[in-house]
Length: 429
Image (cartoon, rainbow, N blue to C red; front, side, top):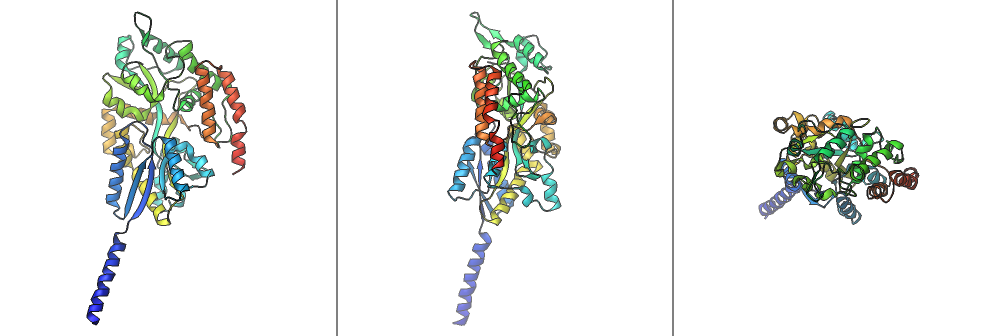
């Protein structure tokens, strides 16, 4: 009987060992999909590569809508006690997430020299919305700047140099005026330029403010700068493009349909995310160009898009695995693959040194515009009570564009509403 017992015990031990050996660390990652480019397929491929290289880790990617939807669903899952170890959320969500005490700094995990070098490898402009109090809470992945797409064929038809897009506000107004087309009834069939004012109007406005040499908030996110005279002038210029110079539709321009307006030839120029580059390349039936945004006092655009965050959820083992996943997703080869597939910015200089991205930008120089604009970039609007601040500013912008208030009235009102809220919110943390 003894040999039999030994055999039974040996079999049981082997079974237990086998189960332990193949037990996987399970991760849940929430990801926004309501942005330009074939995101789901590319993210799935990057995750599959990670799982093949790490057979002891399983990743469940939940595609949850736009950035706001993703934040709401990820937070709801956490509140319900469901593990969510990492998520790509707005880079500007950092202060809100930190005030809720649900994110961990990457510094807690980056202990080796190699890890510290990785954490320092990202473009500084992309880290402006990811760092706080000397620590890194957001690592860039799906990042962008605003760029200007323009129809080179329309430029040629108007007698304009297709290789010389407008570089200043004055040139933008003058060039756009030459690009407007009207039919026999006087109705516009092609606008000179469109700047979207729904969806993310505060983002576009951040570009105009930067071009005036201004930022919309203090570095610590406790104060807003909406009624600065230069900022007011920026909003007035935006309105004048439609109401005074008549080179853009009066009122608001839809974010969600603007790319199609451009592709259908309804506007010769548009300001939009670099994340639309791949979609424009694949669908444009005309020769097009991509340029940095025109300057006034100076050039510039805010950065935009999403960062990876590590959430205080799950076991230590799961959090370490989530950190490993983020490193995988952002390593140069994968950042290059991501940039090529979508048009978003490669997040480090090392990404542009890969053979894949070097070959791609040699063929598609437009892919370098957003990266090159990073030297003139500023942080995206990020404050405490971020949702309220953005809504208030968006309302001020739109009420100006539709003629309900003057730029000065709207921004003074917004400034008064928000002058103390951010600082008070910060003081309460």
